[in-house]
Image (tube, rainbow, N blue to C red; front, side, top):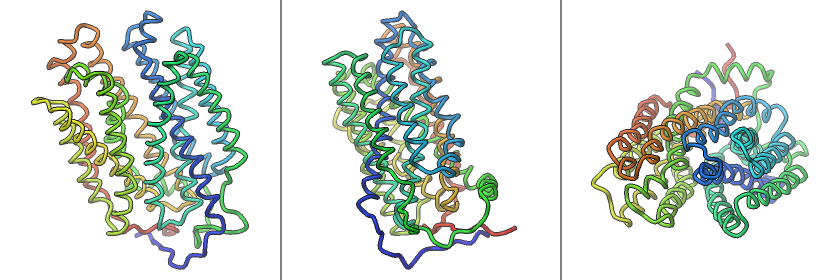
Length: 429
């Protein structure tokens, strides 16, 4: 059995204001990267009409974001653990900005793919780097709650930045809006480089008593831990398909099936994000208080499956009932982030980002696969007619999402509780 150690005697944090300043910049980085990902997908219909490209073909090219995101996760985790959350992530923000710049000048599928791939490469640092900063700057007993704060405020920043992007598109056009966001990325990257620091410094660390071993030793331990893989599969099967649905066709599904206006359909997606933003810190706090995380993950997945079935399949609900379902879906989905917390607790902080990279690798992989399957089946019907798109074939294509969640539910049953205790040393074997 691995030994766990919980810190009990804490020194006062020497730089609490700096800790929060750096966290806010990390939140802006994550929100910026995800806004670029989402808003460029929203341009699919315009780009299809502009370049006379089929929607499925364009969607496959747009998926370059997730291909890059998926492939970069473990390298990103290793790079951040070895070199810190400042220098390379600052370059990653500039890479996102470069992707927005390329996309704004796109005139072919290749340029669209290159722009999206650059966004994916840069964006692959955003979430993991935020978790590394939380780990380096906040005590382990607060990791779960601060992760929830990071995720919740990231979702809020996505809403604000997304609305700003839409306003810019309406005022200037989508190309000019992306140029503006490219400039924002340049400014953010510079601020990140000059303000963010890897750790509090002055010999102070929020982690004491860590095992003194080589990085390679810790790296092997991460891959030998079966719980890391179980948690990663749970996260992948749940978060990946849900966010692929929300990104790719949730709005179109509501337009076609419920006959909503675009404003109402977008509002439903915002309700999902609002529930997700509220639930992340709330369930993190509660799970830490009662020292149980698995309970919330298992029940969260079960409730998410129920909400999806109510949303996707008849009898269809009214606007108010559907809005409630979307909020509850967001709340239920937010519990899956506790999987990241358990992964962090099961691995020593020095190698924590690499371990979290495995989980995010599965998230990126399932996002990519789910988006391909959803787009292929859903958009074929969309291109033919509204009646076909909302027929049984569309219902069947979207059935994949609750099936994926059910598989994630099965994996979640095998998660081992940590008692909310952080691991600081591996048993020497």
